[in-house]
Length: 396
Ligand SMILES: *[C@@H]1O[C@H](CO)[C@@H](O)[C@H](O)[C@H]1NC(C)=O
Image (cartoon, rainbow, N blue to C red):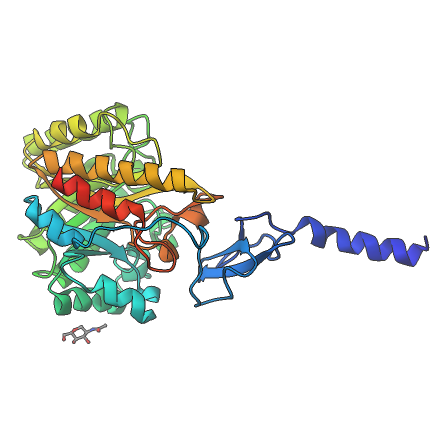
C-alpha cells in the first residue's frame, strides 16, 4: 500500500470512530461528539438540544414528526384529561413545565394550552437567575412574561422557578467575591425584584432550589459558602415581602423516599418555622427511573405535610434506558400510577407537575446518555401508556 493510501485510511479512522451507536446522541446545542450514525441509523433532530441516531426511515429531520419506539408502540386508551382527573381527586392542579423555544411549535402549544389537561405551568428556564438578572441590577422579564401571559390567557396556575439555585447562575454572582452583607443584599434584590415582578400572577415559587447534597449536608455553593444557611431565610423573607400571596417552596431532588436528604429537609423546615421564617411548601422534584419508584414515597410525603407545609411533585419524569420497549412502557405506566396515587393519598400533596409533557422536549436524553422516553406523550405528541397510569393514579 502506498504512503498516500495509508494517510488516506488513517484520516478516515477518526471519522469511523466518531460514528454514534444506535439510539445515541448525535447533535444538539453544545454537542461536541460524533454527528453521524452507524449503518442503518440516521441522525434526527428531536429538538434544538438533542439529535438522536434513529433507525433510518423512522425520522426525516428537524421539526418533523419522529418515533423513538417504532410504529407499533402501545398507546393510551383513557380520554380523561389529566387536570380534570387531578381536580376530581381533590388536587389543585396537574401541570407541565414548558420552555420558550417550544412555544413556536403550534401542535405542542395546542395541547399545553388545554386547561382541562394542564391546570398549571412552570417555566423550565426563563425565570432563573441567568435569564432574569444576567448582569447586576439589570433585569429582563420578556421570556418569563411570555409564559406568564400564556398561562393567564389559558386560565392556568403559574409556578415560579426559581429565585436562588447553585446552577444557571451568571458569573457576576459566582465570581464576585462578595462579602456576606453584599451577597445578602444581592439575594434580597434579586428575589424581591423577580417575585415582585410577577406579584399576583404566581401560585407558588420555588424560592430555594436544591439546597442539599445527597448525604443531607448543605450544598457548598457561593450562597452557602458566604452566608451559611442564612441565605435560605434571606431569600424566603424577600420573596414573602415581594408577593405575600405566593406560596413559598424549597424544592429538591432525591427527596422522594425517606433517607438522609429527606431528613435534612424536615430539619430545615422545622428550623425555619421555629425562627418564624415564611415557608409554605416542599417541592419534590421526582426525576425518577422506571422500576425504581421509592417504596417510601407516600410515607415521606406524609412526614413532610406533618410539618404544617404543603407538598407538590414539581418536576416528575420517569426515564428508561432506550430503546423504549413495550415492557418498559408498561412498567413506566405502573410507576406513574404509583407516584400519582401517593400524592392522591396525602391530602397535603396539592398537585403534580411533569417536567414537560412530551419526549420531544424532555431534558433527559441530553443529560443522561442513552436514556429517555420519560414523559407521558411520545415525540409524536401521542399519549403513551403512562398517560393511563396517571389517570388510574388519580382514580385509585
Ligand atoms: C404580556 O402581557 C402584558 C400585558 O398584556 C404585555 O404588556 C406584555 O407585552 C406581554 N409580554 C409578552 C412577552 O408577551
